[in-house]
Amino acid sequence: MERKELAELVNNCDMSGIRPAMTPLPYPPIQVMRRNQDYADLLSVDYCGGVSELSAITQYINNENRLSSEHCALARMILGIAMAEMMHLQKLGELIYLLGGEVDFTARHPGGKGKMWTPAYLDIPGNAKEMLRADIEAEKAAVSQYRKHIGMIDDSCVNATLARIIADEEYHIMLLQDLLKGL
Image 1: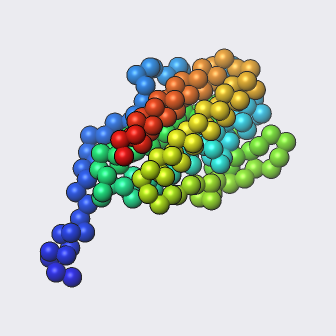
Image 2: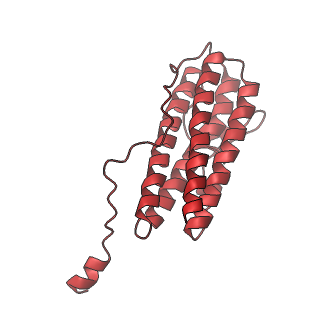
């Protein structure tokens, strides 16, 4: 390959200085009222199930990689959202551990067996508009699942963290909808 051809393969999208795309609200302290394996199991689904922070991170990073050469501004926002999802994953991991659960990328559904995270959970569309639509639907599913889990968990400390995560997810929906309108 000649030097000119190699230069054309370089991605010039600068990702430096990107910050997590989050609401400016503080997070509550990461604590639990008491150990509870059932609650840890519910949170393991949010951590690494089909609708989970791990799935969101992986999907966003994949989208960012594929968008960065043609849609730099969009890719930068997607990376900022992925960074916020990483923070959610970390906070859920702490809660699971405090509740007495295992943080091992296995979603433990109540009354059922655990299932290890798999990339089969991801939706990998082919173009920017389809990516954004899939990301919006994934965020809506996450909000719904978090609300369901709040209704099942009788621990105000855990629920405060989940409610704070929901605020970020709703912010992500708004950002993604605005990005979609701009395409």
